[in-house]
Image 1: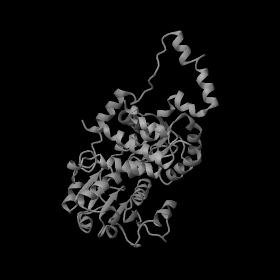
Image 2: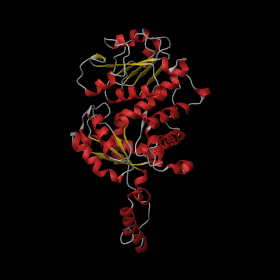
Image 3: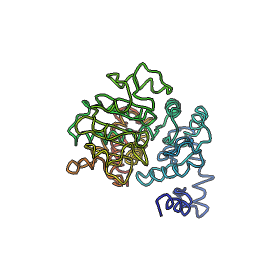
Image 4: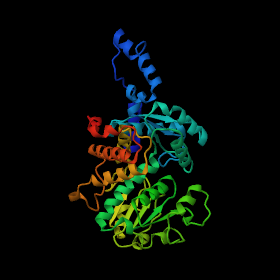
Length: 402
């Protein structure tokens, strides 16, 4: 039985991957009076006087909404809100398993940006953070932008920022293994959707030498006309030499390639045209832009994919649980660039120097110390950057992992 059929059978068996579990017993009148009426009126009145107490007197301090409209689910595309529920439940399960963060799936039956933003804004007071998931570009950019202006809790589109954090961590270590310096490197990113643009912005923050973005029409260059409004912004800060052409032209003499696009777009000849010791992150799933064997045969020094059956899996699970754990711990109002950069360095530094090599540039995703390291770094960055409400919390951070 293959994994797809086996997974379907498991979902039939599980009948859902998450459930609500009560943190209090209600077995007699006294317990009922404390958990519900009449006793529950007292915390209600306290929160009315000071809404910040909703973090102390309810589970809000550890609760994330995982929200989608079902328009860009995995590689399946626009499959709708009902069909996206297994993925959202799975995401919630990962939050709980890897960082003990409670998460709840919400699938919105709308493709209207304003409706989605309003819906999330109206329910935001029930949560400590918002994880946007599988929302198609370019609407995902506008939804995130508006929400960051309207709500006072962290908003994080994992398809953009989680991917960018892990790709950055992987590149930091790949560059170290290959003897390259980030600020001297030229990076080609194939795929200029949500993930590709977020990766580009993260690498600019990292101090990358030059980025060449490529989409279905070819190299993105300032001065060109674009269908996607976000391409105008990214064109101004990439492609310093204003190279024209397609993917083959972009990859000539480049140090590294990141693909968040489609299978089979990179040839061995393209890899051979790159600079010495090229780094290839072919992240299209399930079939990458070039298979690792072919990339290695063409001279790639470090190869990463999104797959678990090859070395160097670039998997968001090493990022988002710890990112939210850290943000929630200090009650951050936002997940800013400083926090994302701190997460990338924490992930990269989690690989022991003695074990760092071309086939081991990222930590084991099942190492439960990784979310702790990421959360600690993110919490500290939130405090230093001024977005944390609860600055003293960092001193006792380990209590969040007991």
